Length: 245
Image 1 (cartoon, helix red, strand yellow):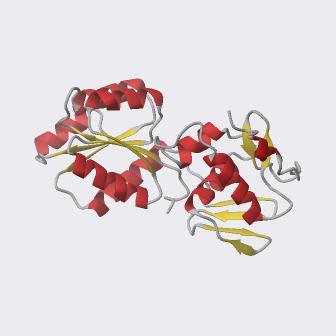
Image 2: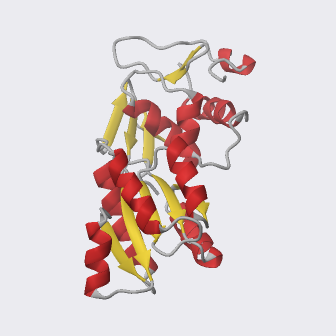
């Protein structure tokens, strides 16, 4: 599901591989794009090239400590929020972790529901709020209820189709590139040269019906024009890969 209409990108940094993978699986079930690493230096490289909304960060990491990575994230002045994990939950440890710039602190072992709630809260602080109801022409997307309707009739979408449509509607008529859609709706395992975005947009168009509300902007990406600006009836442009680089 989506959290209050937000598309949230998470990085889990935890050297206990089974725990890291379990956290990632659970967060993905919540509809999030989640990347995982078990090493501090690898995490440092990932945050240098990808803008994460929330980093779930273990303090005790090989090669580069979680403390140092947290300090670097804070110094970068990005909106990335840090949830620090540690095996020690004393008051002194919590104070130390927060003094490093972490936004929240959770001691192991922890209840997964609590982790989800804390990541939710941090995600809301790092991502501009999206209106719960997005509309364009006769199309309506209800983020809270995960429902899409057109001309009053409900449209059944997959989670990825819903995510793509939400990002496009949130752009309010602006063009969204395939790369941005991959980053916000999928995760690092999505091949940047894949046709996944194009295929998803094609199936989304079919489900939404005619006339098409999604334009392909050749060489740039896709958009849902705002009301009054008109929509394209040409849905064949995507077949040649327009909008994909």
